[in-house]
Image (cartoon, rainbow, N blue to C red; front, top):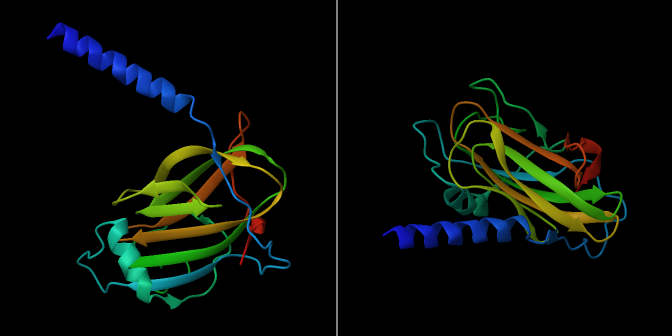
Length: 193
């Protein structure tokens, strides 16, 4: 039995080391590059009705947004934790909201960046063809995971997010920074649609 545990511990250590050494996710620039995008992000909303809660996971949200309706554009990804009962993002409801967010994010310099999405509740965030944020179910406003991405050149990169808010409070935010540098909230002026 001791040999089995030793083997399992060695395997776990190897997997952790491999994950730590994993190459950054390589982002693909938008093609064609948008010439003069509007500020912010486009969003479509789907609503599952008043509580009790109806959205249990990001999978449900993805199904809901197939029939979503356009909403007022987002200013960016700067939606701090709300008070309970406050509207979700730019939608006029506070609970059981799914959002399909589309647009671009601009990186002004190539390099290795760290990205970190924050959400309450679930999120599936993708930039330049790579998943950069994911949380399947419900959570309070908190960081999801930090990922390293390689930005091959300055410019605009496609951004797609499916997000849901079940009940209580809501938030949707993102941090970034050059690898090894200080993480900061992503400013709204780098988003366009």
